[in-house]
Image 1 (cartoon, one colour):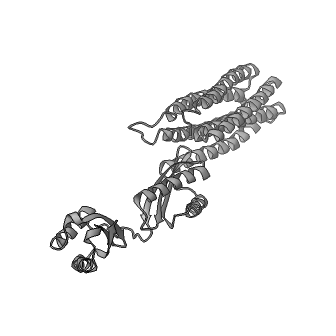
Image 2 (tube, rainbow, N blue to C red; image 1 turned 180 degrees about the horizontal axis):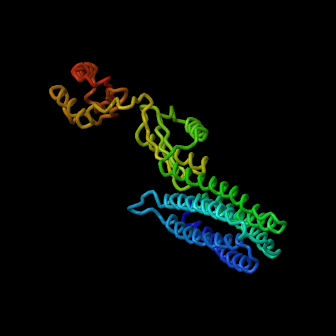
Image 3 (cartoon, rainbow, N blue to C red; image 1 turned 90 degrees about the horizontal axis):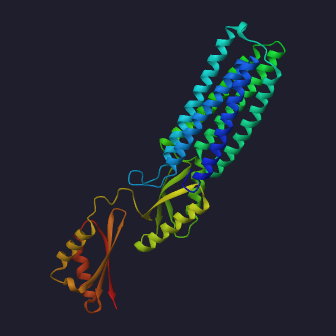
Length: 373
């Protein structure tokens, strides 16, 4: 994912590629026209098409590096994913055009001619230059974890492959086999189409929130379970977001710990996951009690309703001023209540009476009384 800190490096590698595409495009067209190599002219036009892709990458890189805002609270990384799809579609169109041109030329073999040796040298120079910019762009893309830059790198490699086709065609034509470049071009078009498919398919999977591979999920689950205080993993959901990973995790903890302790454990777990799995950029932790049952507590009364019921039940035996606080535990479809009384109001007879009177509530699993000293 290209963030604001990496935007400059992404722009630099793209501008270098643009300068190379412009230079090679002009050179191949001029040499192709002067030497009679139609394939070299076509390859030059292909290089100019890369300039359009480079300009698109610069635009998307700028958008995707912007910070989150009100309309895009998760950032703009998905614009990079969209850009990857568009580049993939562009590669597929290039493959179709190569096939179309090759078949058209096969139908008119008399229009083919053997080019000079300068055409071969130009094709070799193009292969070296495009392979170099492919490797340079690929390394930067892997460093920045940018799928769009990686797609652009493969676009550069298709130009190098196209130049290989041209070189084969020129060499064959020079030895009298004018059809060799056409058959090779069709084979390369299939390779380009395969690359385009992999780029588009991977990005579409990201856009529809496809989960991480099972091996990655298993490793993350094992890491979570190894954190002290985590009793189980209730749910683990994952999705890709512009080259990074987002996680939603439901963990089970001891059902009697405090809210603040559960919150602290969740913060610790989120930091630990990001440190151990660098591709994880955001983690949402949901704390569940160890004995929690999914949807089992939806029908239970809320805190203010529970307290109101108990106070009304005890109004003849205990004043509200004698109660210092309540703790409620929602577990397995029932409620366990801890009641804190001041010291002067504690005696066994009163506690037994309060427990018996509270048994009328079907949602009450148990009740305990404690004194504040």
